Length: 139
Image (tube, rainbow, N blue to C red; front, side):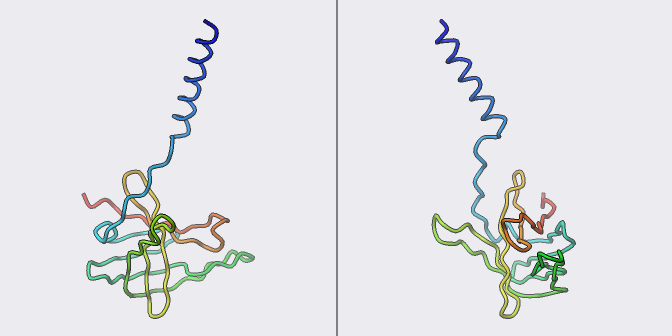
């Protein structure tokens, strides 16, 4: 009887811990052009408008970060072409790439509920400094 009770308690503890941790995170869906079209705003004051003709306009995009001073260098405004980069199968996650002239800037997809957000790193990724873009649902 004690062994059975211990097994039940152990199974209950595992179920509670798994539920409390949220289980494994949902993988990001494959992102299509339709998923990125529209007007995006960021938590760092930037805006991004993505058009169906594969062009975009961005304002105040952070492009560099100085660790010592904490200063963020921003691109005042830019216009260019966007790309969906799929990465190497099974290795590199998909990114949303912006090309302005000869310069490329990549944004990473992150899950926000049932939708996605776009994120660009500020400085070293290990420092967890990000500028995150979101948009309103097109419902």
